[in-house]
Structure formats: structure tokens, C-alpha cells
Amino acid sequence: MELRTVASTASTNADMLALASQGAGEGLWLRAVEQTAGRGRLGRAWVSPPGNLYASTIVRLRLGDPGPATLALVASVALDETLRAYGAEPWIKWPNDLYIGDAKLTGILLERSGDAVVVGIGVNLAHHPEGLDRAVTSLAGRGLGAPDPELFLRDLADAFARWLGVWRGGLEPVRRRWLERAHPVGTALSVRLPEQAPIEGLFDGLDSEGALRLRLASGAVQVIHAGDVFLI
Ligand code: BTN
Image (cartoon, rainbow, N blue to C red; front, side, top):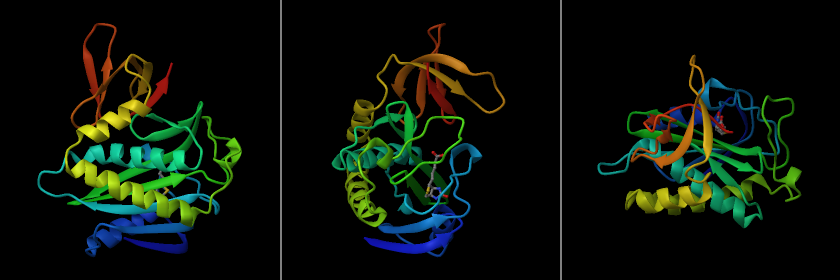
């Protein structure tokens, strides 16, 4: 395992994609003290001043690996486990956001290039952005201290390596842990897809690719691969 730190960069995901194209292998983590153009899911920005964790790693897909999108589950269960060691009790919102109460604590962004999947993780340790259209929080904001991002990353990298090993042996244990930590099956959800009216339904678990199964009022199940999910 190798943990590299840079003081400032645009986006550790962008850097890791570049490193991937130069042949970087698994086990490498890149952390930035701050990002000037942090990327979020669905084209959003991830505001990244010093104090929080901004880090990315790479997974090289192998023959027989579970579907690459299910690395979102690996990252979220590893992050959940790490946060619990710091006293937090988060829950997971599909696909890979960790919340404390009704406020988002972490973000995970997967980006793929060929056989490389870059897994980028942002954790609000010391502070969280203000003035967003949704509730957000940080460990410090919840009275759980502000861990040193470097130390937190060491623990996270260990947990990620362990869960990646589990995943390579089969998705089921990862999926089981994810489901234990997520909103229960039957939870009413509203899903926003780009340029469409929101779809409402009941959480019906995950498919084999980690996609969201949403049971509609008609009884039909709609499978959702990307979207913004709200509990209603
Ligand atoms: C989300 O929108 O919830 C995902 C946010 C992912 C942010 C992390 S911070 C480290 C890595 N580099 C980026 O540019 N984005 C991810």
C-alpha cells in the first residue's frame, strides 16, 4: 500500500485517472490537503478546503470480478467501518452516501477508464460546506472530534483493502453488509433522474450490479443505475 499526499490539486480523481493511464496499480492512494476543482456525483462540485479528507485510489478490474459499479458498495462499507471506529454511527443512502441523521457526511465518486476504476472519497472531518440545498454535516460538527485526515486515510485504506479482498471472493458479503447499514427494504424513496419527473416507490434491495430496485405503486420494479435518491 502506498499513501501519497499533495498540498493542493484540482481533483485527486482526475490525478488518479492520469496515473492509471500511466500504469499505476492497486494499493496506491492519493490524498490532497485541498482540492481546487473537486468533483462530485452527477456533475456537481465538491468544495474541498483543508481539514477534510480528499483521497482517491485505483482498482484494476480482473476477469471474474463482480460488476465494477458494485465497487460503490465496497467503498461505502469500508468507509462505514472506518467511521464507526471513530465513534460515528452512519447509515448508507443508495448508492454510496454516508449520512448521520438527516445530513450527508461523505461522498464517493467512481470513475472508470478501461480496466481501471478510480474510487474517490471525500469525508467531512473538520467542517462541512454551508449554504447547500441539502443538509450536510462533519464529524467535528457531531462532536466526534476532527481526526487527522492522514491517520483517517490509513485506517480507511486498510478497511478498503480488506473489503476489496472480500469482494473478489464474491459480492454477497459486501452486499449483505451494505444492506444492513442502508435504509431498510420498504423505505419510501423518491428518485430524481436527469430531466425527468421524480419517481416514487419503495426500496426493494439491490440487483446483482448494485443498482437500486424501486417497487412502484403498480407493483412493477424499476431498476435505477444512476440518480439522486431522497427518503420521503
Ligand atoms: C458526491 O457527490 O457525493 C461524491 C463526492 C466525491 C468527492 C471526492 S473528494 C476526493 C475525490 N476527488 C474528487 O474530485 N472527488 C472525489
